[in-house]
Image 1 (cartoon, one colour):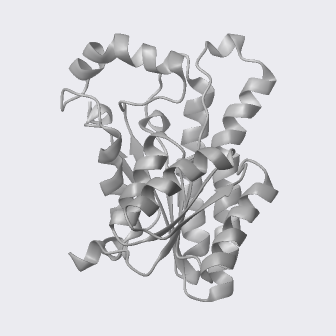
Image 2 (tube, helix red, strand yellow):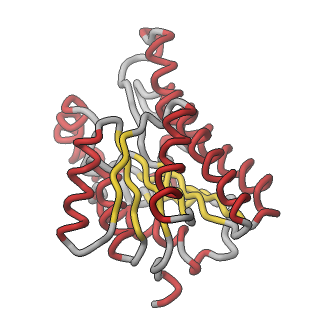
Length: 254
């Protein structure tokens, strides 16, 4: 349907080297968007870009640490320099440290908050400045988590960061709506992907328990996050802003 068509739009997506970010890059390109992907390593970002080019898509890979202002600004600047505009920002890159809250160091706490909440704010701010400069409005989609709604053992700072993202969405949607900027989030539940080998091992060991606790009786596949993100970025959601869309198989419905 044309409502979900992103043709002619330039989308910057953070954390495209692997996992959900890679799936988002592939999915947004398939929906018609020109994707500008980034990672802290250019080589890693370029791997996904090469996949897109092999499928016939124009794309750009950028090295950027979006947890610092210069990195977030460089991503947006690279998109505009190459394609002349920006229409969509997808904040996806994130980090996690899994351990009891009592044992967290202040540096680990800063890493989790910085790699999630701060990076999302910095990217959104840089994108919004460009949207306002263009005078065309724009769309910001954030990959949050059902950990923003439910507490999970040994993930307290991560839950706090994701809860902050949900409120960031609401606050920015309220402030930037008059500029025609929509801001929303999709919140995955347990997905067959994790950011560390240790996390992957944990998911493998816990999958039966997770499936039993989830109303749909399974974990999500990474590609299942593409639909919610494309929906929020597309004209199908043209009057949707400040919304937190749970994509967790019903975990938080119980």
